[in-house]
Image 1 (cartoon, helix red, strand yellow):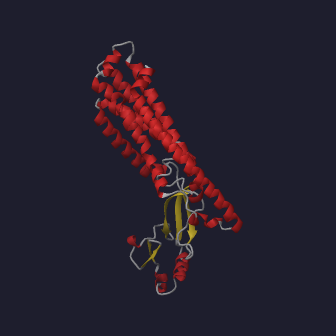
Image 2 (cartoon, helix red, strand yellow; image 1 turned 90 degrees about the vertical axis):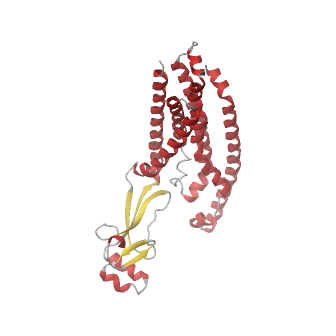
Image 3 (cartoon, helix red, strand yellow; image 1 turned 135 degrees about the vertical axis):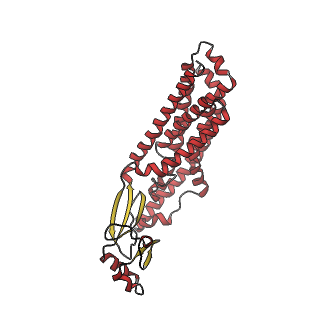
Length: 331
């Protein structure tokens, strides 16, 4: 049965292997160049004590390479479409599954071998692409502190492996339920994209309670920032009672501070025609504070583990659905 699976899907494996090999060559060549450039810049800036400006003065990589890295977001979905979707659907659609089941191979063994090899291949390809991207991005991560940045979190670390497992399991389940290849492919794309967007936008920020820090309002630093890598959830200005200091919710004279419209207390209204630092001092004296809510860098791998676990569990559930459907249908 394993030999049969290989003969059925070897062309897909050859194409995927060739694409992975080409991608690896590009990553290894450009990654070594970028790492060398970064280390040389570190040595130079250390001698002149200007390393604090390195993030703004050093450009690593090229727009084409960063576009290629961003396109690896599609790898799990492509695996689900081209490997998972047709795996069971095509067999059921053409009737070859029925022929296999009348031989010495049971449904359970047929499905276990097919699904097992597909999931193993998805984990291997997803892990290989993620490992290359993570290694290639290490100088950029160190320079720009972008580990948590949208898009970067999703293509590095361990989460791409779980995305690939989920996508392939989703394709298999869609094919088992719908029994048609094209609807299974469309369902795989739609559900995968929708779920990834929902989790990234609405679920991921709440894996762990975010940290909030408040700062004295100062003209030199109107909005706070945290050194190093972190994920900013929100930031702004709060009034003395902790409420949002937006004039949208209050009446009175307002002043814009870094895009945040702040209602001035009556005692500060007369300072509008004077220097901005005096307005900041007045707001600070009346209890106005700047705040930032963020996820610290030391939670990066915890977030990776939580999200990888979510998609791995979903993949396991989808495989279970496929098993139940195949074993019970037309039994």
